Length: 202
Image (cartoon, rainbow, N blue to C red; front, side, top):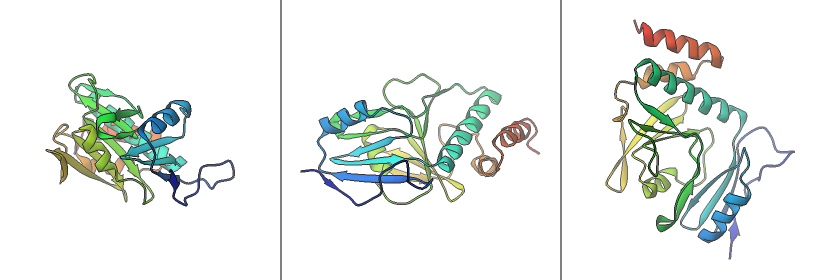
């Protein structure tokens, strides 16, 4: 039997913030069917061993994830790093009973084979499924969280993640500097300023 947690579901009258709805006891086949049939912009699903979270991101969430993506991709172009982006593609692994859509994700040095090398998650509200548990089942090497105006990175060691201070896949990316530009209120100005900093980081 599927049980629902009491959390507001996205609706036309919902406030302009992240909305979450969590179901427990959901079979894998039900999750797959829901994901395939409700494939629409603005709805993210995270599945982990029978627990399904549906999330509608806020405008602030989407602005942050888009700016982060633009800045990282600009860094890759300026530093000639072969970076391949896959946005919010749905990734699933039935054997591990896990699936989700990252906010942004990338492979470094090669195109994707099955799962991305880096997944980025913007965290503006608490609660919901532990994303690291999901990503470990998918075998994603690095997970970056943008939370409280800073990056928090984790790398997969065996079957568990450990916190790291800098990316092992993009070691030349200064995350403290990147965070300063993510905090800029104007997206276009932030991208231009970051480009200038990359070219003259003094």
